[in-house]
Length: 95
Image 1: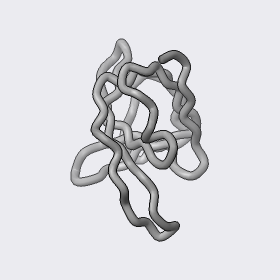
Image 2: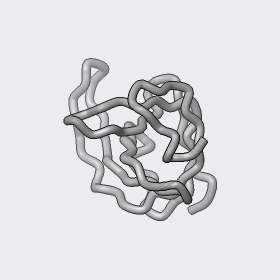
Image 3: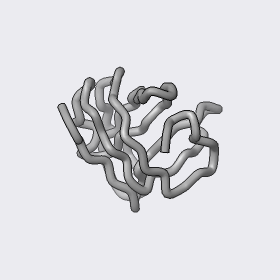
Image 4: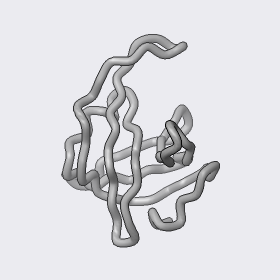
């Protein structure tokens, strides 16, 4: 799948992209306890998209090529974003 294929409400998203920009991780309180989150911009040859990195994924460095498996697309503050969520996985393919 390519970034240009992503639409709001999509699930089971699998793609490879590069983190081209990433904010510093920040601490947040969720109903599951405290964790960290970082907003990032990912890119492939079809475009750019927002990615939310939760927990340990927030430590993935900018410039890393990643693979998102079983992710989902949602809207937050009227902006579409991709997230691995509870059932997905983000792995670093290349740093």
